Figure 1 (spheres, rainbow, N blue to C red):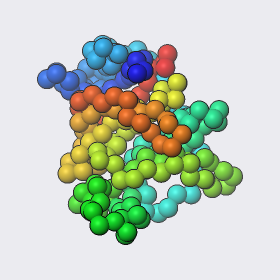
Figure 2: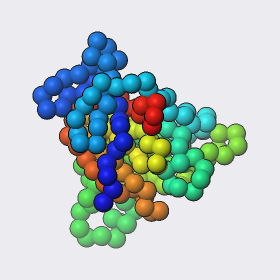
Figure 3: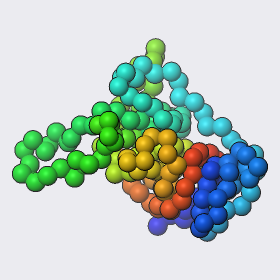
Length: 194
């Protein structure tokens, strides 16, 4: 199993009963591999995705332009809300769908999308995941290509603080959960050292 996270920076963090304000008087905190929080250094802004002509029904909540697939060229990785759709295969299944409740009161579900940008705002889907069990509120990609997400709850809404931080690695068919840590945060970034 991989060792978890170099340093990751969190804003608006509450861990172990201690509340820290990101960007305010408390500043940003770095989450170390052992799970402790320390004051953070300089932040590194993620590379923005090129402009894309996305479907009008998509509400992009977070994005980063990085190579998560390991093919040597960056992708646009998006945390997006869109109208919920069940798996097409459930039409032929007699058992219930496992993603039936993965949506908010408006009927929208949260997804991770990995897109290859093309000319003039076009893009090619590399991978767009099913409705997530816990909606992603923010995401970033570490220099080694690991996807790191803050996750909330559908009942809490799109702008609520997270309930977990998760680390994911690309499998070639999608993402595999490597680790999840319970915490509350609003924003996510990496430090200048990555």
